[in-house]
Image (cartoon, rainbow, N blue to C red):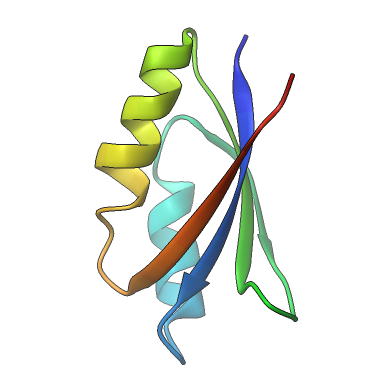
Length: 75
């Protein structure tokens, strides 16, 4: 099953809100609040590569208060 790691930057102070919203997304399997260049790291999984891409594009990147993402496809 295709999966990816997504590194996320959020607006200052919005970490808890974004994490709650991410945990509601079915394809999101793990969520971590981290310190450093990124604020949140998630592992996402979907039945196909296209559904994985769609979930990242339409469900994750569209969340309010997310400033930027970096996706790492697992091979």
